[in-house]
Image 1 (cartoon, rainbow, N blue to C red):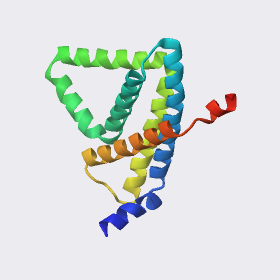
Image 2: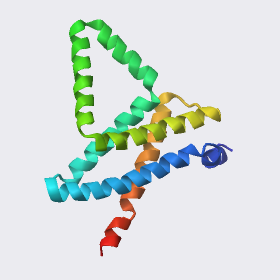
Image 3: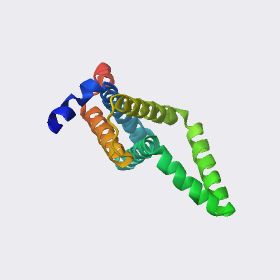
Image 4: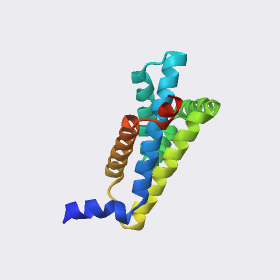
Length: 161
C-alpha cells in the first residue's frame, strides 16, 4: 500500500514532476556551460560539477529546512558580536559575488523556486515528512533530473552539424 502511495505521489503533487523537469533542463544547460567553461577558461569538468552540485545542495537545504537553519544561525549570532559580524560579512560577500554573476544566480533561483513550489504542493496534499527526509528526497529528485539532463543529447550540438 505504501509503494502504491509513493507511485501515485507525482499525480497527486504535479509540481514534483515540474521540479524534475526543471532539473533535467538545468542539467542539459549546465552540460553546455561545462563544455564552454572547459574550452574557454580551462575549468575541469569535475570542478564545475562539484560547484554546481554543492550549490544545489545548499539551495535544497535552505529551501527545505529554513526554520531549523535560521534557528541555528540566530543562536550562533546571539552568542557573540564577533561571530555575528563574521556571519553577516560572510553572507554579504557571498551574496555580492553571486550578484556579480547574475547568470548563475538565475539558475539557482529557478531551482529554488521549483523546490519551494514542490514543497508547497506536498503540504497541500498533506504529505509532510520531517525536514531532513524532505531535503534528502528533493535533493535526490533534483540530482536525478540533473543526471538525466546531463545524459540527454543537446539539440544545440546537433543544430551546428
